Amino acid sequence: MSYKNFRFSDLKEIFGIHQTTKRLFVTPTTPVEPSDLLVSLLELSKGMPLTTEKAVSEAIILPILREIRNLNKDFVELFSGENLDAEKAKGLNGECDFIFAKAPGSVELTAPLIDVCEAKKGDIDNAKTLAQNAAQMIGARHFNQKYNLPYTNIYGACTNGYEWIFLYLENDIIYIDIDRYYLNNLPQLLGVLQRIITTFRD
Image 1 (cartoon, rainbow, N blue to C red):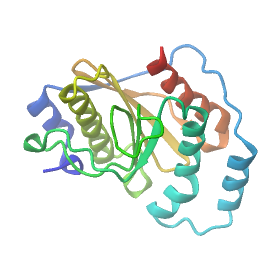
Image 2 (cartoon, rainbow, N blue to C red; image 1 turned 180 degrees about the vertical axis):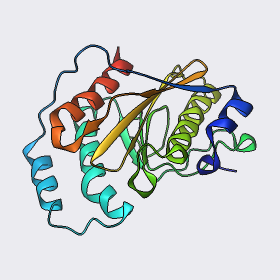
Image 3 (cartoon, one colour; image 1 turned 120 degrees about the horizontal axis):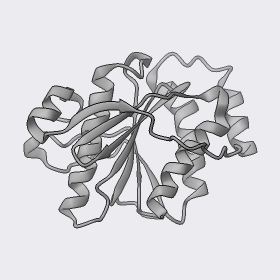
Image 4 (cartoon, one colour; image 1 turned 90 degrees about the horizontal axis):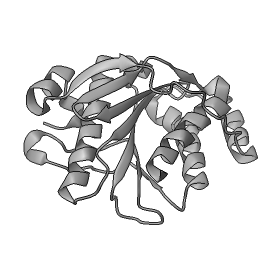
C-alpha cells in the first residue's frame, strides 16, 4: 500500500483522521503580484498542447510553485517527485508530486510542510486525489514526528493547474477548503500560497 491507494475511509480506520469542509482563510489574503518571468512563462504555455498531467505540471504548476520558493528561499525548498517514506508498515510511503519543506538550499528532504498533489484526470474534487493528498499530509506529519520536528499541522493542495483547492491537517481532522483559487486570478493564488508559508514562519 502507498499514498495513492488510500481512501478517506482508510484514513479514518487506520489513523483516526476524519475529514470535513470549512473556509480555511477567513480574513482577506494579501495578493502577491507575479514576477515578469512567471507571467512570461505562463503566457508561453498558452500555445502549448497541455494534454497530459505531466505537460500541465511542467508548464503551469511548477512555475507557480517555483515562484513561491524563490520568494522564500531563505526558509523553504521545493522538492518534485520525491519519495516521502514516513511509515511504510502503515502505507505512508510513495512518491509526492511536490513538497515544500523547511530545508532551504538542501538537496535532502527534511521537515515537510506543504504537499501539492496533481489532480487525477484534471478533477480537483476527485475523492481519490483528495484522499491521496490527505494521506501524504499525514505522512508528512509522521515524518516530522519521527525526527522530532515541531511541524504537525500540515497544509496540502490539489490542482489541475487552472484551479486549486487547499487542505489543512490539524489534530485528527483534515479540513478541505470550501473556496477555490484560479489561475486567472494569479495574485490571489500566489497570495494564498505565500500566506501558508508565512504561517510556518510565525
